[in-house]
Image 1 (tube, rainbow, N blue to C red):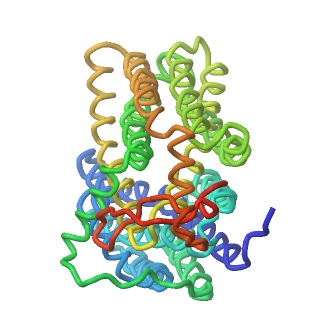
Image 2 (image 1 turned 135 degrees about the vertical axis):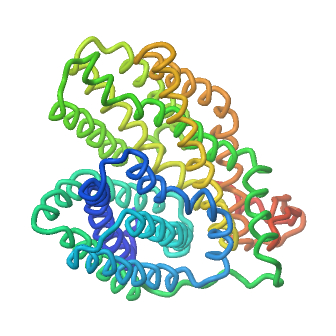
Amino acid sequence: MAKLPTGFGRLWTAQTVSSLGDGVTYAALPLLALTLTRDPMALAVVTAAGTLPWLLFGVLGGALVDRWDRRRTMWVTDTARAALLAIPAAAAALDVLSVPLLATVAFLLALGGLFFDTAATAYLPDLLGRDPAQLERANARLRGAQTAASGFAGPPAGSALLALGRSVPLLADAVSFALSALLVRSLPAVPRPAASARESLLRQARAGASYVFRDRLLLGLALRPAVGNVAFLAVETVLALFAHERLGIGAFGFGLLLTAEATGGLLGAGIASFLGRRLGTGTALTCTATIEGLAILGLASAPNPYVAGLALAVCGAGMGATMVLGPSLRQAIVPAHLMGRVASTSRMLAMCAAPLGAFLGGWLATTYDLRTPLYAAAGLLLTMTAVTATMTSNRRVETALRSARALADPADQDPARQIAVRTTSADGHRSQVTTPPAASER
């Protein structure tokens, strides 16, 4: 198995450090807001501000990333976020911090995250030569580190640092962004996609979105996290209350439930490549989605906290594996010049679905009972799995990978042996070219 390049180690370190800072801020921002107001609507504004950039600028952000140098986009974005955090840190030290300022900071941090995450997603396949096996290994390591840093270490650190002073966690996150920027700037340069004829940003954004919706495999990969977010947010909305009233556990026990889910996520990310090799990526994705739905069904019918914790751990494992296999496959098959737009379109669909899930969970719990949102979520996940199973089948995956390999290495031009494979123009439209079977057979 080929060794991952040295540059990946620096990218992994940069994203791990940044994720640790994200976890610190994730815990600190709402706690900071709580020191300023007890108004639920004001607190909701701070939380909602962090989701708006993906809803408002997701596809346009991807189009911009496809125009810009991706490595430069990452380090400039992290430098800007480090400087941004100095503003609320100073305001906290001077005792002039306010809810509007926190909401503005949350919005701008999320906007920076949009550009950084999209650029990183587009940069990784170029760094690894679009090799599917290496992409799965790399994404497994990135996902595992992100979960450990932002899910396990970051939030407790944020709460502890806040006890030292209101500006301390913000300064800690600023330092993490600065270190990430320095590491990213040292990454190797990769060839930029060939420049296309100058088009309007809106037209390029539409081309990226339409590319996703016209390709059944990419659409299937995008539908799973979108529908999954509806289901998981429906569960998350009532989970704390469900744990308290149905399982009889308090705040500490609820924290253990979330830890069980995160632990499962680490395991799932670790075995994702193994599942892909043994089952095929398409079948593995169908299996992990099925596991998620069955696990939520088990959570809904759990008679005690131990069964509930096991169900959440299994669900987390399915999610962890899915979040490695899906993005890795997308990075391997999408043309480099469309990678930013395709990634941001998929992410935007998932983010837009989240508020719907939260509303659905609250409405079902109010109208029926606390278990109903969980049963509904399980039904959604299993239905989505059935609908998308053929869209992401092994056969469809292998066809897409063969086409991508053929386009990357059209070495044999013997007309008697050529086969037609699809390619994509700069504006997202497909045409037919001929490439040799030798380049497209596994």
